[in-house]
Length: 237
Ligand SMILES: [Zn+2]
Image (cartoon, rainbow, N blue to C red):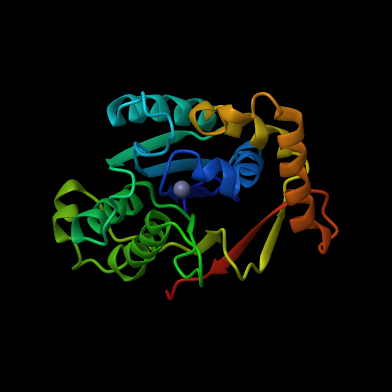
């Protein structure tokens, strides 16, 4: 951190599925990437169940979705996208999954992590809930304390403290980020996920209009044309 260029941050997005980062924080990622922050995107599952098309196999879908994610990340200005490759709907809160996230946190040393809110009261995708939970555990205390996953030391990795965690999709947001300038980039990135939004190709403008209305509703009470909302957590240091 000390030798990083002043005010330049490393941001890590830890998302359950391909397309979650575009929908949940695409405008914010694009904004920060434009400002010169380094954004690294971790996609935990391969999204291989996300279709109603019975002619597709899981292997084909996973390949398509990885390709779509790479394109979308490029549109947003993400500098690196890393796929953990767990099966869609198959995430579990295991020491192995947690260890992979701890390794990535110690390797890339993000100042800010964006992930799913693990504490949704009612409807929430199991993979999102587990990703949020495991990411938080990986941040605190596992990546912070050296005696957890001590094998990382042999690879030259040292403990890391994340400064802030932003929960996307939170029911209790307390931070609203202005994405008025990057809303169009967000839509373009979402549009890369054709396997997910391709059914809207016929009524694309109408669908974009709905997305705009939603982003406008988030921004309205804060005087912002379009916004994304987050819950901020500052892990104990
Ligand atoms: Zn998802």
